Image 1 (tube, one colour):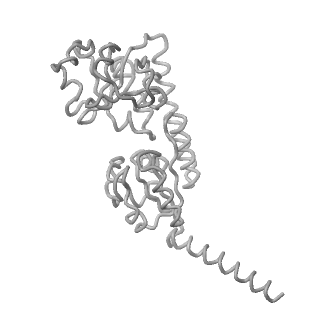
Image 2 (tube, rainbow, N blue to C red):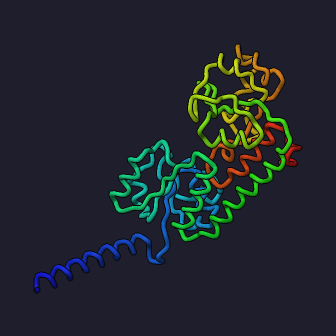
Image 3 (cartoon, helix red, strand yellow):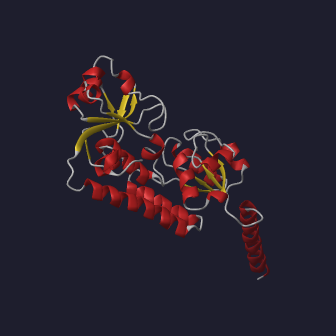
Length: 292
């Protein structure tokens, strides 16, 4: 009986200690502390109204501007565990990708919750926003962010009704040539924007040789490999217009290499609806959805 009481008291003491540790991690105000190691999840936290909870970011998190004031915890593919732990987060978030499961496992071993969702479709991007809203108690903000994406999709769908589709390729780099292929959200965006993705095999992000690109003969080349934002800097594809092979491409000869803003079009976060509109304009001209 005495042993039983002692064990019960010991169990209660352990529970109390764990609760105290959890409270200390949440800080004196009881607020969540979030470290985000990918640009898309940093944007997501701010978009749902939880930006004040973010205490650290990756060096690539450049939007919104307020994020630039946050401490940096390394890169997207190589986050610094010690730097993250020093910020005492209650939750670390990021896109599933280059860092792999190792960082999640290491953080979990230190008692830190993680959220690294798959975001390879618009539905998964919206699910990420919804779940993040639940975890950070900003459900209304998450609902509004998803609603904005869906409003942009409806707008593009209405504009594409009855319009001929454009045969296109969407390139991410030129040396080697990386393109949008089936199974990724860039392919989904391209199709919703009224394009026919000529790269229909090889996975979500295949490499192409120049001979295959010439054989595909796209009407439009979407250039996500630019050195700057949309309309700024140099298009790396257009810079090759005099290079052997490239100069034979119809899209290059006829001036239909369209530079797109990678931060909206290629970032699987809350601005993906704006990225969809940008792709529709790149394929069909600004008049299709009004001036940017």
